[in-house]
Length: 337
Ligand SMILES: *[C@@H]1O[C@H](CO)[C@@H](O)[C@H](O)[C@H]1NC(C)=O
Ligand SMILES: *[C@@H]1O[C@H](CO)[C@@H](O)[C@H](O)[C@H]1NC(C)=O
Ligand SMILES: *[C@@H]1O[C@H](CO)[C@@H](O)[C@H](O)[C@H]1NC(C)=O
Ligand SMILES: *[C@@H]1O[C@H](CO)[C@@H](O)[C@H](O)[C@H]1NC(C)=O
Image 1 (cartoon, helix red, strand yellow):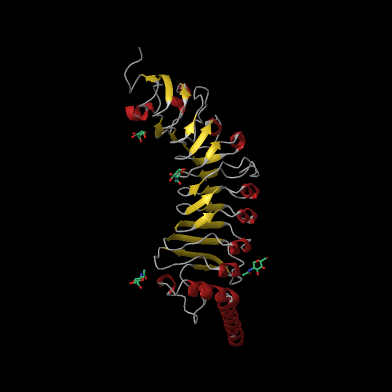
Image 2 (image 1 turned 90 degrees about the vertical axis):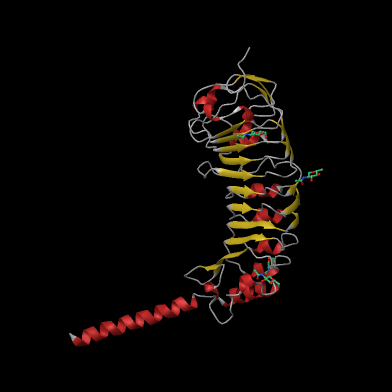
C-alpha cells in the first residue's frame, strides 16, 4: 500500500516536471524572440516595449500572444504610443506564425505598408489604423488568403483598392475609411465568399472614391455598408432587397442618382439607412413601415417626391430627415396638397 502510494506520488511528480518543461519551452520560440527584439530595437525601445525583457519568455511580453502548444508567436499588438516612430520594421516578416497583427493609434508610425507583410501567410486579422502610414495599398495583400478582417482605417493611404482583394475568399470585413483613396470599386470584391459565409462588412467612408457601385454587389450578403462621403455615382439600390441580411446602409454624401420607388427594404435586420446628400429621385416606398427595428432613416438633400409613408417606426424621424427634397410631403413635413 505504502509503496504504491509512493510510486503514484513519484509518477505524479515526474508528470508535473515534464509538463513544466513543456510549458516553459512553449513560453517562447527563440527565432520569434529574436524577431521581437529586432522590432523593439527598430522602435527605439519605446515605452510600449518595456516588458520585453530578453531574460524573460517572450510569450509573457505585453502585446504578444503565442500558441500554447508550440510557443510560436501568433499575435502582435502595438498601440497608443506616440513614441513609436518610423516605419513598420521588416522584422515582422520573421514571425511566420502570426495570425493577428495590430498597429493602432500610433501617429508617428510612417512610411508605406511594407512588403515584408506578404510573408505572413497565416495572417487572419490585419489592423493598421490611426497611424501616419501613407502610399498606396499594395496588391500583395491579395495573396494573404487566410485574411478574414482587414482594417486600414484612419491613415493617409492613397491610390485605389487593389483588384487582387477579390482573391481573398475568406475576407468578410474591409475597413479603409478615412484615407485618400481614389478610383472605383473592384467589381469582383467579395464574389468568392461562399453563400454560407457570415455577412460581409464594407467601410470606405471619407475617401475620394468614384464610379458606379458594381451591380455584382447585389449578390453579396452585406451586414454593414458605409460608402459615405465619397464621389460615387449611379445606382445605390444594389444593397437593398427583401431578404438581405443588411443592418446598416450609409451611402450619404455621394452623387448617387437612382429611383428609390421600387426599392425593397429587408424587414428583419435593417436598422439604419442614410441616403442624405445624393441625387436620389422617386418616392419613399411604403414597405419602409414594415421594417420593425428601424432606428435611423435620413433621406434629406435628395430629389424625392410624394407622400412620406406613415406607420411602423416612421414616427421616430423628424423633418430634418426629409429636408431639401423636390416635393416630399406629409408628416413630419407639411400635408400634401
Ligand atoms: C515619450 O518620449 C518623451 C521624450 O523622450 C517622454 O517624455 C515621454 O514620457 C514618452 N512617452 C511615453 C508614453 O513613453
Ligand atoms: C520573406 O519572403 C521572401 C520571399 O519568399 C524571402 O526571400 C525573405 O527572406 C522572407 N523574409 C523574411 C524576413 O523571412
Ligand atoms: C478629394 O479630392 C479633392 C480634390 O480632388 C481634395 O481637395 C480633397 O482633399 C480630397 N479628399 C480626400 C478625403 O482625400
Ligand atoms: C439628416 O441629415 C441632415 C443633412 O445632413 C441633417 O441636417 C440632419 O440632422 C440629419 N438627421 C439626423 C436625425 O441625423
